[in-house]
Length: 431
Image (cartoon, rainbow, N blue to C red; front, top):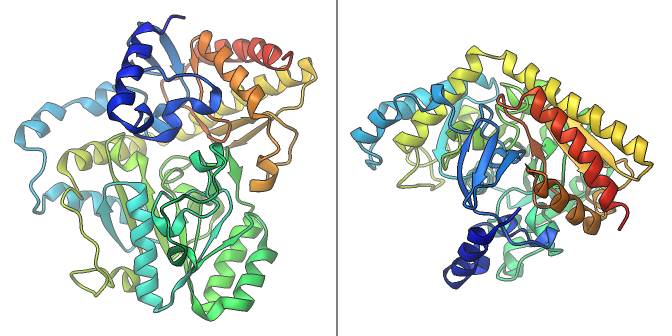
């Protein structure tokens, strides 16, 4: 495939945007390439500015469960835009959206809209600290909760990709109250609570790690977090920015049967538009200004366009819950096909799937935590990625990301992907 126009755009972009991209993973540096620039998408396929078409397994990192440019979702969007895009004062759709989330998640009594997952997690932790009147928080290696200062400590996704566990520009004092434990390791959590328990405000966790590939939390681990936070009076926060409304209508907490005190949302509740939200028990959420003393604000929070798209998206999913089963069956088909290819080729690779989230790790499992994920062969993944891209398949441009499916992916696309997977793996493991 030729990428002349993408190359020209990237050259121009680097003059005005750091690294030429507005989010690091888009730079394709982890796979040793320059990025492709996308012109449009329809269904499960996207087309770049050079006219190349790809089957898309990024799906905007999760929110496009119905595929690109879904007609049912987009119907009436012109009318919404014509009424205005932002007001800075309340609109009815904000109330409808908040009510919808509260009714969908039993653990959430009240919810506050924000504009990104980073804003949601940052705000939730501030509220938890205000509610408990404590300072310390617990997070886990490999879990990424956005780029706010206190959380850029041994995080996942792009920071793993570039081998930087923390970021310059984050003062040491800012992270001194952030305690890092090992994912799926309850003993490390117990040790931290025994030492600092009376000053721990919150534990924040991705119930299914989606930023170090796909690493599901073990049921006993998540239940252990629920139990120990109750014992010490700390707030348990589930970061469901990726999993909320994605792996099940009720998210990971529905799948695991465990209710946190607070939940962070993003991605799907905006159907691809910028949005985030955090919610939880009433007594916690009433700490938020203007009712309580914890300040958090945002001019574009509850943006009517994002709320309209998100509300419509969630209603489609609510009224068509079979989509979740169908997505999982598609993921199972991919998992089986890739596993058969791995067996035929006799290579060291492992598919991890949780519901409809998948990751192909180029190493032997198990993969239960950050340290085990880091065994992967990123050089081979770079070759594999390029081979798949050349065959018209867009995968995450980093080993440590999840693949996402949509309702628009059909058997034809899945079978073609499995065929190409065999060919690409064969090349990657020859080098």
